[in-house]
Image 1 (tube, rainbow, N blue to C red):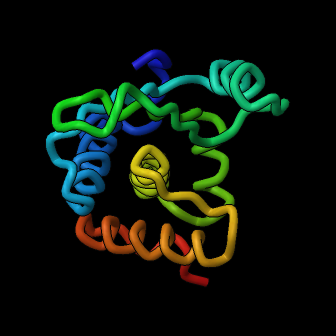
Image 2: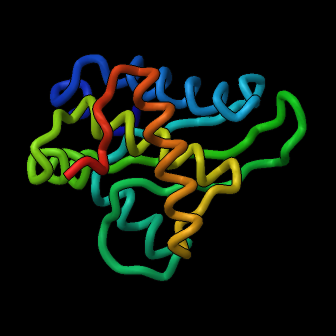
Length: 144
């Protein structure tokens, strides 16, 4: 955990992120995969967003592919920004815990090859997110 304020904002942050990542990997038959989760401040995500995507400003979650698809290989890294995540959760009327688990699952799905560039891709990814989150007891993040 790079940003200690995550623990103040959500004391269970590590366990929640690990549970969401594990549930997502298990749902995709990749329970053996290794990932790293960076719980960071907005400034860190802003720097990563600029360096790797050429985009200005912080974002909620970023995913960085790892060494490969084999069993036990490092699937990749997921980074989450506290300020953006907390602000979005408040704006959407969700708990930070629920939003953290949603975005962790979202980031892991990106590592597994999911994307949301087209409507069909977005629908498939969102359906998988709903499935994973339901198993964790988290409400549908896309419900109106």
